[in-house]
Structures are given as structure tokens and as C-alpha cells.
Amino acid sequence: MLFCGICPNSYSQKGVEISPISVHSIDTRTCISKFTSYYIGPTNSHTTFSYLRNRLHNLNTPNISLLIVDSIKSKKSVHFRFIQTYNNILVYRGDVKINCTDKGYVTSYFDNTFSFTNVPSTNFPSNGIGDIFISTKHNTEVLKKELCYFPQSDQFIPALRIELLQNNNYNFETILDVSGNILYQRDLGAYYHTQAPIDSTVNALVFNPDPITTASVVYGTPYVDSTDIDLSVLNAERVSKNLRVQYSGDTFYLKNNFVTIKDFDSPVVAPAFMVGTPSFIYTRAQSGFEDVNAFYHINKMQEHIQALGFNNMVNYSIQVDPHAMNGADNSQFIPSSKRLYFGEGGVDDAEDADVIVHEYGHAMSHSAAPGTNSGNQRQALDEALGDYNASSYSRSINTYKWENAFSWDGHNQFWGGRKTLSTKTYPGSLIGNVYMDAEIWSATLMQIWGDIGRDTTDELLYESLSSYATNMTMADAAILYLQTDTILYNGAHYTPICNRFFNRGLFSSCIVSTNELPHKSSQFKINTLAFAEGRDLEIIFDQPETGNISVIDIQGKTLYTRSIYNTQSIFIDNKFSSGLYFITLRTEKNYYCTKLIRY
Image (cartoon, rainbow, N blue to C red; front, side, top):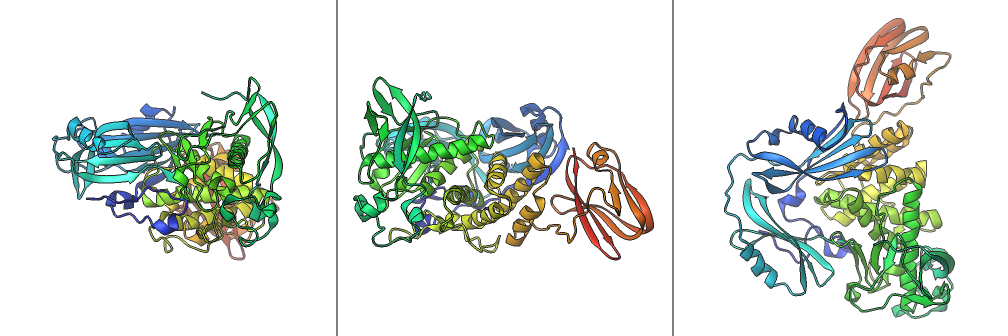
């Protein structure tokens, strides 16, 4: 039985202190992941269900089926999530994620289904049991009540799942057995620790990204929070920016298609507005400064997302309270209400663009892959997404100490912050703390950022994000990232990406060549276009060669190998499915490698 004050899915920005190490097997479980390139034709819930039904062993048991939960469209793919049922009752976290290209190919699936070897009981908790539990919680809104089978110790316990929103900022779920005992409980908030019309442009002053970075200093006198008072050195770091806001009557409001500043959590602080004058000029001692700062940076982040071609990722006016959490030194995103809460303890969280963008990353993840943020490594990937976004965003503005995630809010006496320049490797550096483990993935992505640039690194990350699944691992995320490069760029960035993953332990095998074999040269000719269209592969040498030729897939698996002796041309039957492949040729004198695409 599990009950904890801060449960495994509590994603606190300052998570170092709370050390959220899971104590329940439901959180340490990892999924079965499969990466493929199998053609199924039209990609819809029926064709993907049929594909899964024929491949998942756990679906062969009588009374077991799958229920479609959601489908998400990304730039070049479609992503479906199913949940396992037994006699039409949900199996808790028994979900399956399947990802397909627009052209009808299954690229991966992640299986979290359970094997039912015994017939479970049908003695479920009554609604009255749930009502008794709810009655003990004050100021609570019931978001969902549903029956489920809860897996525990190789048994499936008939249970009642209740999702609640308490005091308007604590979103959690509780699993009760037939006697009303708590089997499991977790916080659903992702911590840092109607669309409004766009009518007008106003001027404002913000930190961009924070006063420590623009001043090129470290935290310390005189660059200190000093309980949020107006220090001249800090106010001097404000810069002028234009904002697109709502204009109604004679009043300007901090609302538009991407953000709505709203007071929905304590302390009570009315959102900033301006009557008559299109100017939101505040000092940091005024509450309006945090309102404007959060509003500006979320808008800039969403504009970046849209510029990369993602038109349905958090594409709504997200509600933001820059003065929330009852003054605590923490922030959060609540999936059920799709709201962002920023605390005011220590340095006000809404004064630091890193905190704002990190927390917005949780909203991005929920939008791209809803319902999948469970399991220790999956949660670490979510935290890493936020930390990476923070460093990526800040580095694009100012390179000073970009590796210090939460430059102004952390790395001081309030808390230590985190870094995206870690040397941690996978899986040896995993400790079960989702915040510390996140540094493996965020640091790797920042290395890739340095190799191929911000836009491409972000684009590959955001597109692959839609393929994320419950209980997936960081190694799974690496393969999804490489697959995405194949889908979007025909594998053009394979070598730098693979090198970074391989060096971190995230990818087991990486083809690194001393020479890149051209499609046509004075030595070799390869019919790459014919191979891409499905015809046999032909390699012609200008002179007879002796050596070994291999065909290797994106995961490093050798699919074909052949020795040649004094040979000038060879044919390889094209029995390969759609995807990225590598042809390696080792002769007596050289080793060559080139990429090939099969459409």
C-alpha cells in the first residue's frame, strides 16, 4: 500500500530537495517498445487496433480488448493511444501508444498491457466508498470517478479511481479498494518544481531572459532578490518589448490567442490592465511586472513553436496566474485545468524566463502526448523537456551561462538550480530522481543544439514528443528522435545525433565512418533513387574490389552482409521496408558508409 505526502508524479521545479524516488512498482515499470516500418494503409483507430491485436500477446486472453483514448496529429505522423480493458473495465496504466506516418507506416509502438493469468474479482467499491473519501477533502472539485482494475503483486484489484482538484491548485488521483483503503495516490500537477481577440499592440518592460544573464553576473550583491524591492541595478536590466493584447472599450487586457493572465489562486492579486494608455510599464516591485513578464515569454515560445510548423501544440489561450501557490517557492502546470501557476517564494518564478518556459514545456508535453506522463524515466523526460526548453530559449537570446537552467530563480541561497551541461550517462547515472535524471537527456539535447542548431533540434524534439508513451525509457526517446530525423529530413542529421546518443549510452550502436561514400564518384555508383522507390540496389565499382558489404538499419542491426572478391558490380534484393538504412563497404584499403532512404 502506498501513501506519500509528495507522490511519484509530483514535478517540482525544486525537486532536488524533495527527492521524488518512486516506492511503487507501477512507477518503476518500463514498457515494451518496438520500432518498425510496417505498412498498414490508412492510419486510423481501426487499422492500428488490428495491427496491435495481431502482435500483442496480452490481448489474446478472453475478455481483453483495447479502447481508443485519443489520437494526435503532428507534422508528418499520427499518434494513437489505447487503454486495455477487461470485461469493459479499464486496466490502470495498461495503455498502448502506436505511432504512424502520414503515408501509412507504423514506426513504433509502446506496450504497457498486462497479462491476466487469473480471473479477477468483480467486487468493486461502491460510489458510497468514493463519497466518504471525497467528504474528507475540503474545497474539492470531483473531476472524474471511474472503476478500474489496479495491478498489484501479480493481482488485479477491483478499484475506484477518483481524480480531484482541491483548493483550486492541487490536482491528484486516488485509487481505493472495496473497503475504502488507499491503494495508490499521486499528484497529477506538473511542477517547476474561449480565445481572446488580439486587438492592439502595447509597449512593456520585461527581463529578457533574466537580469543575471543580461548583466553577465552571478547571483550576489547587488544582484539579489531582496524581497522583491526596487533595486536600481535590477530595474536597469528591463528591456522594452511590444505585446499583442486585447483591447475592449477603453481598456487593454493581458489576453490574446496564446495567453490569458488571470487570478485563480491565492494570494489574490488582480491581473494588470491599462485604461486608455497602451503601455504596461512596471518596476519589479509591482505585481504587474510579473504579469507582463510571463505573458511576453509564453507568447514568444508559442510563436517559435508555430514558426516551426506546429499549429496544434498548446494552441489555445492558456490561463496563467503569476502570483500563485499561496506564495510558495514553486510553480506548476495542472493538466486537468490546463493552467500555469507561478509561486513568489525566493525570487518570483515569473521573473525568470527559464521557469516560465520550463513550465510551459509541461503544457506542450500534455498537448502532444496526453495521458502518458507516468513512469520514472518518462517523467524524467518531461522534466528534461522543460529544462532543455529553458536553456534553448535563453541561449537563443543570450549565451551567458546558458547552461544554468533557472539562472535568476536558482543558483542562489533559495535553491541550487540545475544544469544542462552535465556529463551524466545512461543508464549508469540514473538514481530514480526525475529531476536529477533529467540532466542526462537535457544535456544531450543541448549538445545536439550546438551541432545542428536550435530550430532543427527543437523541431525534431517537438515532432518526436507526440510519439511519447507511458513508461517509455530515455533510450526509446533517442530512437524516436532519430526516426523523426528520417521522417522530416531523410536522416540528414543522423551522424551528429547518433554520435551524441552513443557517447551518452542512449543508443547501443552507431555507425561512424572515416569517409562519406558519395552517391556518385570516380570510384562508385549507387542507384539510390531506384532503391528509394523499391527496386533492387546496384553498386558498381570502377575497378574490381575485395571486401565486405553490409546493410544496417537505424537501430544498428545488420540486415544483410556479403563478402565480395575481385568484384566490379553487385545487386542486393530490395526486401527492405520504408526507412533509413546504411550501406557500409570495407575494402582492403578503406571503410566507407553512406545513408540510403527507402520510401
